[in-house]
Image (cartoon, rainbow, N blue to C red; front, side):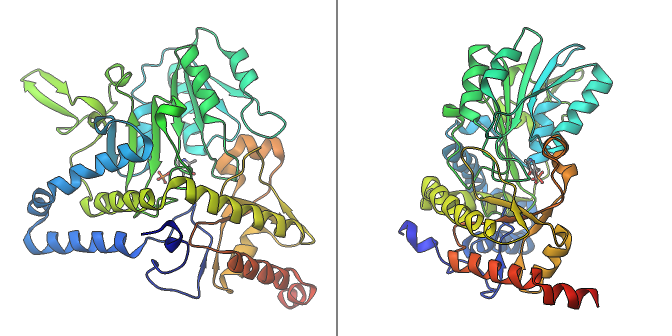
Length: 401
Ligand SMILES: Cc1ncc(COP(=O)(O)O)c(C=O)c1O
């Protein structure tokens, strides 16, 4: 299988006329990922769910290794969970925060993560400090270094935010965290699958990701990486009989490694589908995927900027496959709806999903066009033509009359 054989529509299930630019929402699964799940669901319906999991135990176990290969860690450092949020929350709420502990985060932080910081501020009196961005819009590492003192308990940032093409300098942040021996949590939900993400190179202690976005896996699956170096300092906030073993009437023992963050019941079809999606991405090559998708996004931004009334909002010295823009003529939500009638899927990103960044940059609702390697320039051209028609005076008049 050559890498370029995937850079077309041949692995898609159907809908040749649909242009899917919502890959940061949920991408399109390749046929083989769908097939893997159908096979497992069929097996469950034929012989029973527990029996099916037993029969596929080797394949289920292999998913841990697939994740480990993808992000360059050990299989025992991986927990398979329902989504990135559960992965992130499980690790975050396992940290033994005390009043006065500082959490350093970034301006483009994801709403759910920031809400958790706010909750711990309310309940435990932690201090949330936001690392300023540099002129390019990414985390300013000099500022981060200057903010560190012995009260910093955690550096917690988002690699690629939900609201644009920014790629935060995860590796440079990792070097600072390592130098000062500070726990480092990386939300890689939007980066995994669209670029190489190597936990050893990055130096993060904890990383979280989801299956359905750039990995092209099913919904309802995700994973958590917790380094062997820190896992024994983390006690899950909630445990069940999979996370721990009830050893004596009044005692229990946590699972070794990251599996202490799992719970017993699982959608094994989805987990197997995620494993298949990871193997598929690995076969193509994450570097090749990054080159292809970043170039397509660059082309999209360049062309969009030429449209009158359209402003592109992506920032950062390196920009990935997520393209965001708004028009001064039509609100983003309306544009998303109008593009749907041209069979083009894009999404709307609202300020509340990244409130710090949106407030600082005064960002309105944005149209998010997140491209993948199975998209191509002709599809971007279709988007531009559709946008031109939608934004044209005739269209606006028809809409208003
Ligand atoms: C940056 C970021 N982190 C976390 C999440 C949550 O992922 P999940 O929906 O898989 O829990 C998202 C979802 O959009 C996201 O954009």
